[in-house]
Image (cartoon, rainbow, N blue to C red; front, side, top):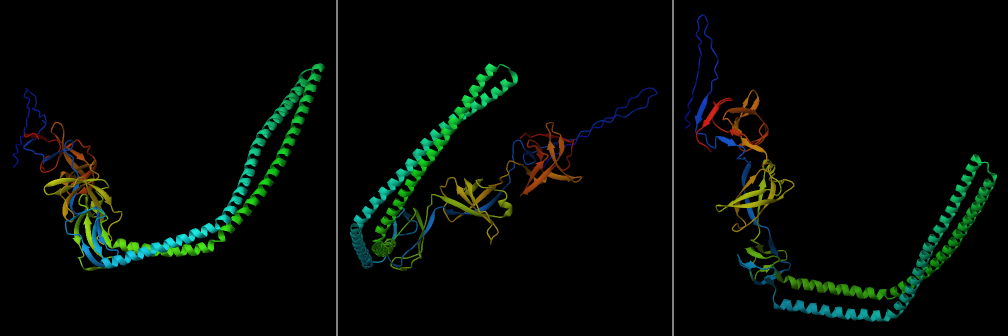
Length: 473
């Protein structure tokens, strides 16, 4: 129980003098509250951060597990499975059938292999008969294709050479044209500014000479263009002839191939049927031995030795105990407080393990209206599948400021909290609150995160009061 010592000091100064009236000076009154305050009564935000959290129970289950299903029907002649047994990958769990059925299945597979061998010989003989005609047609086709390709390459090479030649001729023509225009312009300028007729005659002769050179280069350009066009037309015609010859040889080759296609189709159809029968027999033989696709421990057995098992019927359940995950369902208010990859605390056998949220369903379950999540354990040494463990989740908004709801009081329609300044005086701070998480409330505005907040009791303490803390915490 708190011991409270309230000290009220009232000082009245009366000045007495002859003929003077006594006056009263107001004196500041301080209230000292002496109390054994503890950490439960004052929250130092610079030291302690309140984090919203909630707890639920989650179910553990193996991350890697498999229910082994029979792909064939028959009597289980050998069942190599017992509860708690360690199983390796591809280990035989059960054998279906007996020696007689196995011998029949093997005999049918051998017959299919012999029929396939005979079919392959027939195909080889047919191939030899047609090899000569097909090879001849192929050689003719290849020669025609080579001729066609050479003709195209020759055209391309000629076009490249012509392009260089034409560019050179065009450049020469352009230079001659520019020289003529420049000289003609210089002549006109000279006429307008000089009267030297001898010089003028010389310039006119130069212009005439350059004009002749320009006309000559233009004629040369026209001759080159016509010659190149005629040459390219001849090469294109040669390409067209070579292409027609190649297309003809291609058709001849296809006819040679199609001439024996009918027999090949019959042999291929027979081969396909034989392979299908063989595959079915081998699948049936393969499924007579039921193997485990994963390593782990047998946790459930659904069948018995010497009993009939149907195709699609479950045989055993295998779980890998090395990777255990937790699954849980959260309501709307809980799911809003978490996010993917958040760290959680898992409590089991007086130990606290760390886990991480690795999956959050995008939509709630239609029946329960809750959202399913999965938690991976960072380290698992004891937790087995099929049990319930307590999990504590922490709000993903943990960087915000939270204080107990009891710290807030309302005055004049304002939300206020009492804080203790560096001189141990009480100050009232107006705040803006946010979401409520259990007994904690989010502070959006008003507190910076380094204040000392009075979180319970002391309802008689008000702004301006000074407190004395006897016990240092």
